[in-house]
Image 1: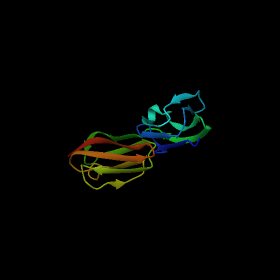
Image 2 (image 1 turned 30 degrees about the vertical axis):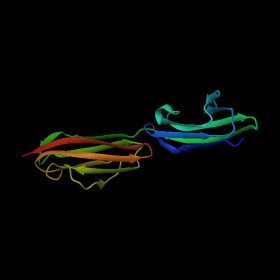
Image 3 (image 1 turned 90 degrees about the vertical axis):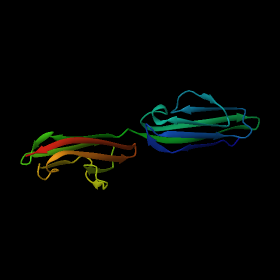
Image 4 (image 1 turned 60 degrees about the horizontal axis):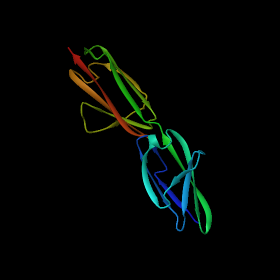
Length: 170
């Protein structure tokens, strides 16, 4: 028996759709053990998809596949990693003030490896530290009017975005 098993992708977030494919010619019974648990019967020629949140949750995981048939038995192993979901939070304090007031923008992320922001819907993304604190007077922090900063974050767990608004008056 020569079982073949594949899993794509081998890593992703809780919202990632993982696809497992098992193939074994001549096998009469097949099963798998998830993370060393009890054997679970499975169709010997199958393909199925499962969200990362339902496929072991956050962490490193493995499955041992066993096949049995008239020609004997065999097995193979699969391994995968599920990363935590990204979080994204941006706050501007105060949310309203004057041109001479100091505004502070605080960015907070979990699981992000790359971050950028857009100011007032600009098409260009400006890279920045994923947990930055920026301070400036209202005249430098967008000038007069209502403003919005949109933070985009990326990491092994996927992508996320968040935004904050503030207004500057005379």
